[in-house]
Length: 266
Image 1: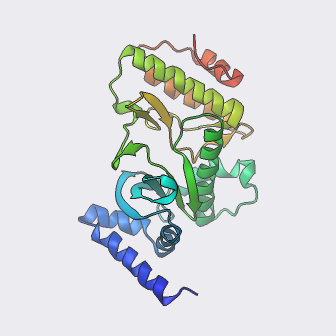
Image 2 (image 1 turned 45 degrees about the horizontal axis):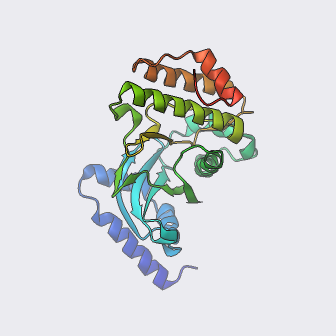
Image 3 (image 1 turned 90 degrees about the vertical axis):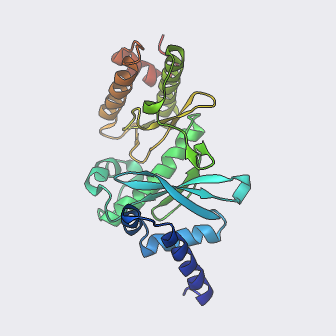
């Protein structure tokens, strides 16, 4: 049973979210994201101190929306709140990545079960990547369809995607080499393939000009039946982008380096 006090607090949270809705687009976002179960999960995370104040949505996608939030837990000030959309997420696309993952063998095939597993999957993938030395948003906790992680940015403004950053040739070469190193660490240490890596899923910390790998929900283990195909696709995407910046890339050499855990293409 939920106490009257908790229900009143929950009502306050719902009212606070509703006050942020200024136009029809935001009303649509609210309806898609904040169902009762998600609001209750947010309340529990707030009650445990993980969320002090929820800010605006800074990224929308087919599978999830990302919100900026303030926290006072563990000397962390800003976090990203990723909420997967149970009602509208691309359920069929998710199934191929989940059902071939031995970590999720036996999972039910319903929409809700797949999406809740996907949330846990991204949390686990981020943990494995971080522990392997890959720069990713640090994952903090997951509950139901919500993932709390490090906010890559400052004062509510996220760092830009790689596609939006103007780079000198030296900066492009440095970032390329770092991305290849991260792909190698993912493969050889974390035993993961990103499976959707491109200039859209890499942020650039403009203070250090370091890449940050994001969106790892679809990442698969190296023993997944499609791992090699996904790795080939990742390599093709990275080679295409950096080729436009006059970085010479040989796809087969890049794959060889990734699988042998070398750090740079010479």
